[in-house]
Image (cartoon, rainbow, N blue to C red; front, side, top):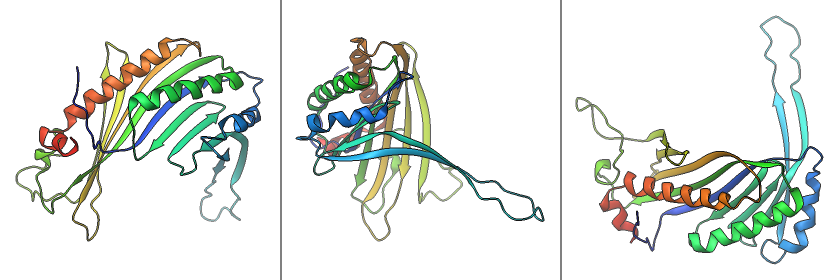
Length: 250
């Protein structure tokens, strides 16, 4: 189904994510070789390191408290960032991620960039397989009213029993929707975060579509999967909002 183009879409972040099964002998430090190739568009580089801290709780009277166990997993990948840090690409041992922060441009502009960066990832990592692909869009919706009825703007608004006061000071809801025909799913989260002493009421609509796969890294069907994820994301977005809300972004 075709949906209308929104000239002022409320997207604050778009995320492309591909998880892989790495080769056992792969050295994550090899990603540093991409620095020169990415310098023009991603001049900033940061290491991504991993670790884990485990705290041990002893019963009262058991003696001197034991220090936490600290595990250093070492270098896990690199962040390559644009000058304004609105565009961030992650090259990790477990996969690849592109984060595009507001302002969002368009799918037609971002998708070719993802394809190009993924080819660079493959040239270095050459993973065994792709295990998961995901497309996540975080929307920040502002209602320019001090008081309003959520049902006017959201088709899956929270419901309060009629016997109780109807003023809502905040809410969090999450549902996972499964598209069995495409074998994809979406985590859909709605969060109401009122601002103190501010008129606008921001509501977050977070749509995280994903598909678990087991495919070769250079399989062209990877991009067919992303097209399906995008289609499902659009279906969720336009059906969670009322026409009144959608009209705010045209």
